[in-house]
Length: 134
Image (cartoon, rainbow, N blue to C red; front, side, top):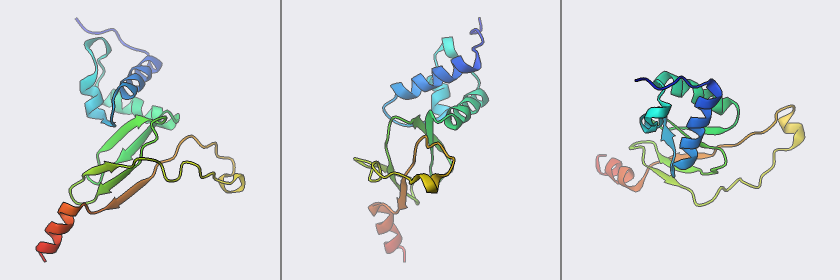
């Protein structure tokens, strides 16, 4: 027996609730695998609805150096340090720019929804390995 078809708004709500229930960011594939039998949807549908949630300002999307996209609800204001070699990621304890306001004359007619902040570098293991191979 197949699961009943969900409306686009219901699909987005299912995905948003799954992201909110997760303690970490999730890829589209992880989200797809986490869906229960009652809320099954194809992988392309998951990604399409994640893109729409992102465009609506309800989820943030972070791209790893390997190209993988990770999603989280915007109310989870987490930022990261990411190794450009191995991809290991460290979550920052607080947002260093949380209280910065973009002046109205700089943002023009934009309504700000969320921000992202990422730092890229080399973790100590990759730095050591690179220095020892020189």
